Length: 431
Ligand SMILES: *[C@@H]1O[C@H](CO)[C@@H](O)[C@H](O)[C@H]1NC(C)=O
Ligand SMILES: *[C@@H]1O[C@H](CO)[C@@H](O)[C@H](O)[C@H]1NC(C)=O
Ligand SMILES: *[C@@H]1O[C@H](CO)[C@@H](O)[C@H](O)[C@H]1NC(C)=O
Ligand SMILES: *[C@@H]1O[C@H](CO)[C@@H](O)[C@H](O)[C@H]1NC(C)=O
Ligand SMILES: *[C@@H]1O[C@H](CO)[C@@H](O)[C@H](O)[C@H]1NC(C)=O
Image 1 (tube, rainbow, N blue to C red):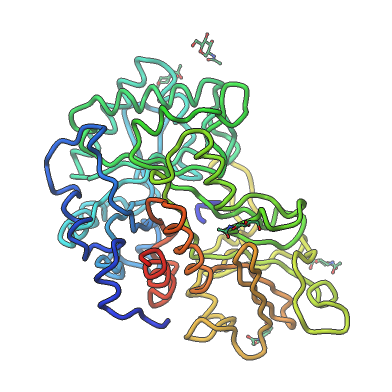
Image 2 (cartoon, rainbow, N blue to C red):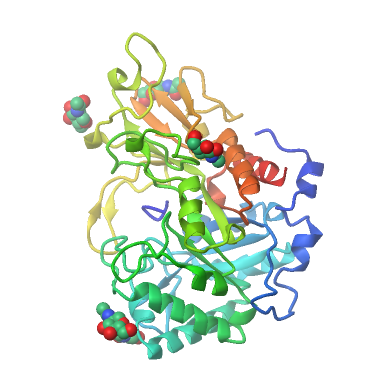
């Protein structure tokens, strides 16, 4: 989730039958309101239909009342950020005063309410918080106190990334991954945390080891976490050499230069390291990345067909939608240029797509079948966007089902338009 980020309705009967919705009693019965302590072996394997709720958007067009609670079984409030003190977490950037209402509304709908801890800007102090036995014990107390205070059902650790720099000023230690595991093991021993749904939002390759390489064995994490959520987005963007898919489903079918990671790649990397497929939730984006592309690069010569992986003008980053940063100094004190992201709703608002989510008249469209990615292009403004639509969400949902993954989680709940994306993935993941 870079830059902090980051409709044809299905018939109600089909939605009700889906194992991915809160309508399913089988899924519901194992959820948090049951106070039965779950041993590690007996932990729930019910499907996860989830989204992140970005607290800061509650006052920017997506209030709590806009959440389609009945379509989910889990929502993550984003973010509680780490602080320099191991005894405190901060909700300062996320309208934290709304968290109690978020939890009570989730519970009223039979939905698990989790806190997402960290995020792109909020993980600066994870490393020091888990660096020593003393700090790990203190951090277990901090996290469980927070859970008790807000009556939460789960905690998601979104550390970007152990022993691998993210935003630029995170504390980093060679032992981060080992310390993280030791912390989670201690947390799981705690009587409060024992009953929680614990997860981690992760990158496409396993947490790196002390030498900086992806860990060969993450089975220890599989024992203490209920699941991981793969952040399969921001794979291509303004930092890339060419226009490419934000969230590729597959890349093993692409030319080698275009193999920059995908859901298929990430699931293989994590399962090869010992994370069972049914403990992997696929993170799916509701936004796309924009690029400035000259018509001479966008089209095949003499035709008006969009080409794959065109070059773009990095000096002319489109600004994206009203939720995208226009450029600002980040928490590390470094100026970051415009994010250039477009949420799905903004592609409709800004005229790239019709209300039905199809390319608008005068907008060029291409769908890449390897990565399962739609592209739109406005020749006049020279803006090209790689994004996700109902078709790519259906492909992702089918993959979740066929690969035996635990479910999906959408970044972010407020990015959709009339639940077009959400309904599509729920329907496909069920069949
Ligand atoms: C332990 O946590 C405290 C903050 O509460 C921090 O000052 C200290 O540096 C941490 N220890 C290590 C080894 O990082
Ligand atoms: C990592 O942990 C080992 C002991 O487990 C310790 O000797 C070493 O100093 C630690 N490295 C760092 C960078 O803290
Ligand atoms: C990914 O691509 C490979 C190679 O073309 C293909 O065998 C595999 O079925 C694809 N997987 C998915 C989920 O599309
Ligand atoms: C790229 O964009 C910059 C800024 O708008 C412009 O000055 C430059 O001419 C563009 N380069 C090309 C090759 O179009
Ligand atoms: C394409 O961009 C131009 C310039 O910003 C704008 O006037 C036009 O409406 C856009 N075309 C469509 C179909 O949205």
